[in-house]
Length: 295
Image (cartoon, rainbow, N blue to C red; front, side, top):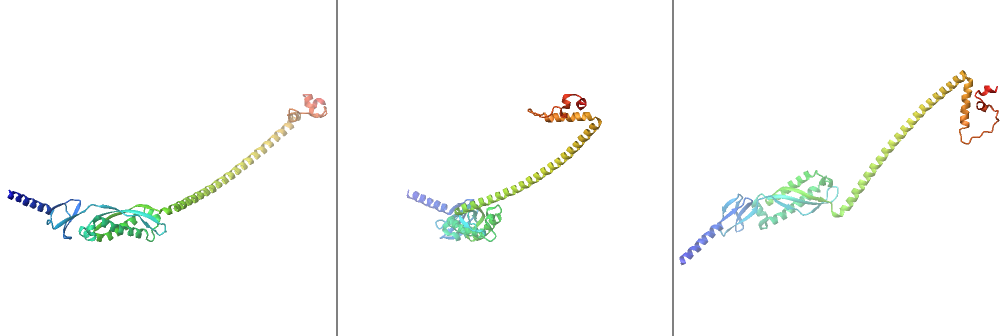
């Protein structure tokens, strides 16, 4: 009985030793084998591996691309318009040994803190360099600036065993205290542009109206000229016809002129004449023979 219990204890101890000497590395991980805090072996390929039980320990690190949101930071471009920048980075552990030596037992928390301390100064340096204006940062042409930030951050992160894959600007805004002033300035600029457009429109309208008025005057003048010529020609033709009619039949001409005088003199509704009844004016009213009948 005692031998059986002892055998079970020995078997349990052997299993415990075997299990303590075996570890598995996932394909998403890298592992370090430590002995008394010193690195004795690395395991970067997924699969089964062995260590000395109870003496050596395994520390695993994520081998995937990780994300880091940086704290907001203020930058001052060359045009002195301060901006609040909020960025994020994509990074991965490229050298697990160097990473362990750089951050120690702090792991990813310490690494991200130190990486943030790298990113923010680089962002301020690049966005605040000479020739970089706020319009450049806020426009779609800021890709070159982001590439510079990524390149410098990647170089400075190498001693940490980290590879900076990419850096992007999430938000680029004016500080809250500058927003009202900026909006007022933008509003004033738009109002000035609108006033300029209105003034140019009024100027163009005046030119069009002046041209139209000039055209009207020219057309009316030309039409009046043609009308005067036509009227003069008509009067001349009328006088010629009257002259011919007078030469052909003087009596008919006088009869016609009397009818015109009657029409003009008796045209009103309240016409009165104070005249001698024997006046020649009424010759054609007293007889159809006119002046000849009085002779």
